[in-house]
Image (cartoon, rainbow, N blue to C red; front, side, top):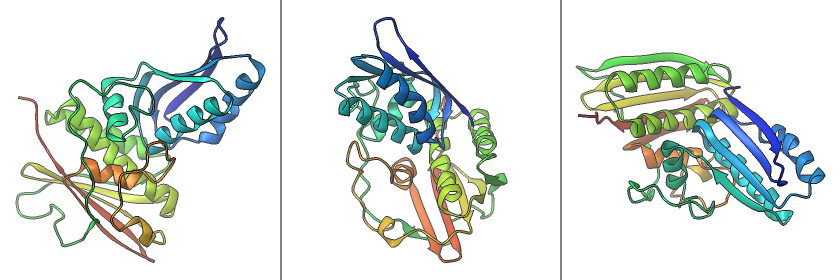
Length: 262
């Protein structure tokens, strides 16, 4: 587990959920089981989630925020988020959740990208042509996703990518790897190649394939909806998403445009 959780009750009766680290592949039921006794035992008027120590999130972390907000509203309590770092705030903005969560959009927020089509069928554009450089070739499972994330982030730092772009690159890869672990047989393989100013990430699993309902034209998830954000988020971040899926497994290729500071 790459994240830490703590529940506190302040002298004023506020129930405070403190998260830290990389909040990915979250077991929401375990965290809610820690939170619920405090909600029932204290005559609190507010639930606060402190994100000041959170370095990154994925869609399961987003789902946790929404579940806690739902808990608070159903018990007549207020709800607030505190301390989100700029990269996490941009993530919440990209997910369309700043207004719902009572936050202001980041000052440098770009207009939201609206997904306007289905993923493209694989056509061989895998970044392995003449002049390409292999960056990464790793197997992964639940326990090793954090290692792959660190390798990707380290490469992004080494080639001068901005902090915002590093966050987006790792987020997109994390969402697809998490899908492979949770729905694609528990493990997979990721390869990353660079060709000119593009990174080509290929993530493969041996699961039973992505259901057709997740592959067609899909509007942005309704704010507050829990789940089904991972693939949609990757499409917003990446220049291109190509998918081949069937009973023998799924291959997802992400094309990410590289821009560097200075």
